[in-house]
Image 1 (cartoon, one colour):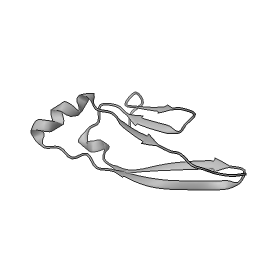
Image 2: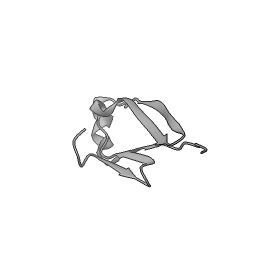
Image 3: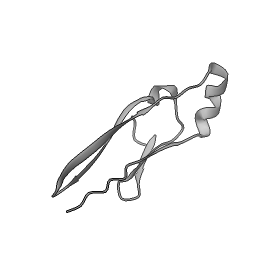
Image 4: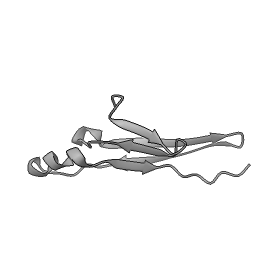
Length: 72
């Protein structure tokens, strides 16, 4: 995904895709690392639209929240 189409915010816990497009759908992996180890989750984004509704996605953003409760 080109730089400028996404943002990583809130101490690397949010991945924001701006101006969502059909080609943005797929699997996204969220991974947390610490001295205790590594944990990850894969989230599947499915962009559902018809030709007439896809034009309105230009103003829609998807936010993927990556919240892990890791203890040391």
